[in-house]
Image (tube, rainbow, N blue to C red; front, side, top):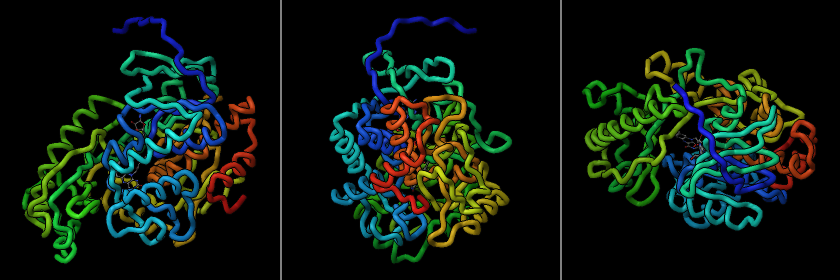
Length: 445
Ligand SMILES: Cc1cc2nc3c(=O)[nH]c(=O)nc-3n(C[C@H](O)[C@H](O)[C@H](O)COP(=O)(O)OP(=O)(O)OC[C@H]3O[C@@H](n4cnc5c(N)ncnc54)[C@H](O)[C@@H]3O)c2cc1C
């Protein structure tokens, strides 16, 4: 059964560029567009910016130097890392300027403040939290209005260009863009409900010589877990006695379906107790660990991949592809968490992650075309839902990859809005030269 729902709603913002979602992609996009002089409206459904890294408590940021040598995430990402470091926002003992420090544990509350500060400084950038995109209005291939719901009610945003940084491709999909989802059977990577812990004795953890990855098999055999899942990314140290955990998986979740998401959140909270028991009883230094909180958002690795003018793919990864319209280069390995924790799936995961990884200095190019939504004329997509196959999604979805695509989408959208050109009519070389000015790594330009 359906009903017709009709209302008059105000156009509350009329801007050059609207960005939906304020994770790394959305922050990169909104700041880059505003720094080109565009008027920008940025929304996020949560109470802070940062997406997975803040609201979902994802424990760390990946290095800016994903190829181990070059500052591939130069520009907005490196500025955020710099500001975060200046406020002691990374966990102890890591140096974000050192390419050897691959994983940089995050002090989440500091990161939230860095985002508040950096977006507030930008005069042409307006934003609101607790503002959810709920629908869109289109005119043929053009998106005309984004419909949002917030505490004041429902309103619309009119914009010349839109950037979908929702992670799930909500805006593009609701505007009618084609997308792909999951593997051939529609199965997606599992999520993880991330966790913050206290009362960990890190000195004892490090001096014990024990590793959670090695001990978990024993605990599985002993029946500690309701799901036998040996794939354990682990807990990162964030302070003297604190840590943030990327532990446990929610298999079968689809973040674009609230029924599925609700089940996953409940499951995630339940297995947290099992992991607490495992860490306390099988490892040293965790005997007194206490759970502080779980993420407000489920940690989501994969949902829609919006189809763009180009679909970046495994062949490009293997060729270390160079594109004339490339807007960045990236090197994070293929990291597709198994949809089900079978031995066969785990062996496949390990093969892709370990055996197919690049040598230092190697990378693949990301073409501007993979950010331009194929079925629409004024919509770009950035972040974990860009146009790519599942292998590339498993790489580009990592934080710095999302900053790179976000920043480029912001520059392209601003350029199109300001010059009144269609997205496809803008000169990729102009986007590239503006990106280089922002600090992007574009060695082939
Ligand atoms: C468990 C886990 C561990 C990870 N570990 C790491 C790691 O160690 N290092 C690393 O660099 N990366 C890591 N990642 C990857 C990385 O954090 C994410 O893939 C990345 O944050 C995706 O960025 P994004 O901007 O595309 O989306 P997100 O970070 O998901 O941001 C999307 C934003 O859009 C908002 N939004 C969504 N829908 C709407 C809507 N309809 N209306 C309004 N707002 C909306 C959300 O609230 C959110 O803030 C991890 C991911 C997971 C799940």
